[in-house]
Length: 312
Image (cartoon, rainbow, N blue to C red; front, side, top):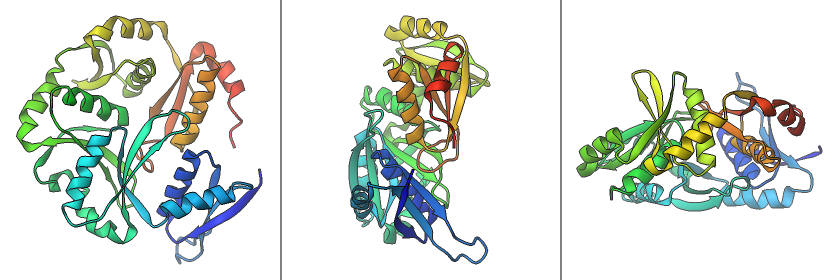
């Protein structure tokens, strides 16, 4: 594949951020880091596939100079955070996008790079006045299902993704208004109207079944109780959930990815060929949670490996 340089950066974060945006739009992109780690000199360069320069430059122009401070798959939790930040006198930019491989809509909140230091104190749940953290998760859809559960009980939500100094995500906090905290906490503990369908000693096994059920339209909440990871689903989905879990006895990891975009592309490719594939996320990656492990049923391993492109 031929490559063409489209931009140089001083910041690896900015390069990684724009690479992810480009790949989400279906543009292959790579980073070449020429920076000397001791002297901090040299460029960090972003390349795209030849023939895609014009489209890539248009996207870079739209996003260059911005830092994402929040994103989520539901609009309201991000909008609530936007209102809080703008209440501190900091201008924000709200964007909506759709992932090309999954069709899932994301709602993203940005500030100018010049305002990052002003925002930093508020990327801390304890600094969000009037709101209180009711749950901490490491997977996006786990927060989503808890939000949906609370929404059905007329409890407002805010989602805050806490990053480290390198803007790598550490945890996703679900916040509710202070006045609703005790009610929300008790509701999430009881999960009234939801039933347990399976439990696992290892979290990745619970996540595989969570992905399987979610892909079939069944909401799943994972709760850790006494070292065991329990899967809860709405009581009307219990029978279908158990049938699905029992029909997939053994799962094998076929690939690990650094990019959620590449992982979702391969997951979609396998799905088109009738192969059920599950993504399991691991903590401490850029932007979302990732690395990403792709699992398939043991009966589909050979076919999946033949369909996936060779690893570079």
